[in-house]
Length: 100
Image (cartoon, rainbow, N blue to C red):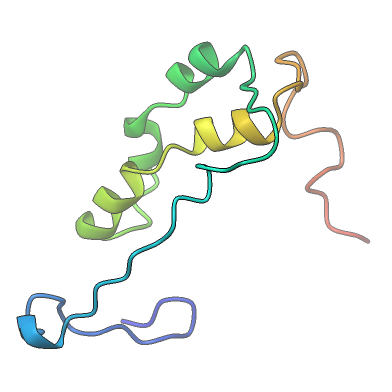
């Protein structure tokens, strides 16, 4: 089944061990020059967005959903927006409204 217009291999398990590629990614945060700040609302807001809620949309296969569940998007958002307030309603009025 195509994903975003690209076809994927039938199974990763079918690939012989000698033809697998190991990629080593550098630790880019090791020498990060800026101070890391996390949003103070991270713990309370992350608890509110449950895995069950995300899984209820059923947009991924079980294998892909498992990989998606390992991501911590709440932490990413909290690091990207350390000074965002919790009181801003989402979506903001008109933020997702298509142009007329």
